[in-house]
Amino acid sequence: MSLLEIAANLLAGASILLAGRNSVHTWWTGIVGCGLFALVFLDSRLYADAVPQAFFVITSIVGLMRWCPAKGRESIDRFALDGSIQPFDWKAFFLRIAQRYRVLWGDSLAFVA
Figure 1 (cartoon, rainbow, N blue to C red):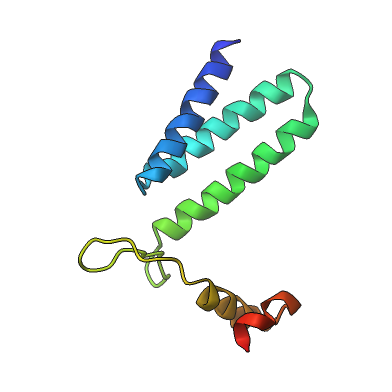
Figure 2 (tube, helix red, strand yellow; figure 1 turned 180 degrees about the vertical axis):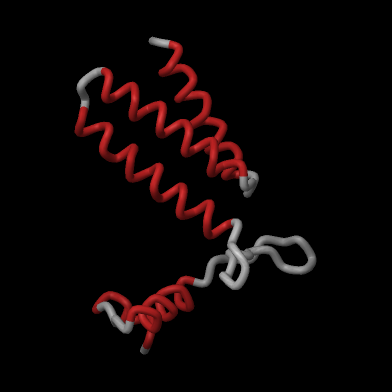
């Protein structure tokens, strides 16, 4: 196992632990860890394994942008005023997606009815 693989695994593990703590640092550790994994896979000529790492980096960048919004953009706030974590409202999520993109998916009809 190379030092690059060890660093990638440590950063990926740190990202998972930080996600469990709901920390913003989960994003940059995930981006760097996935980037290192992509380098390991490219160096080993495992191109099919490197492609998902690029996807993970892109989704982590989107997650970081959603977590730390610019002025005028909505943020993800799952904490109540008393500090407790609120459950994710799947019904509202699917309805917001349907309204935003003017699409009503067949599998989301159960949420609308």
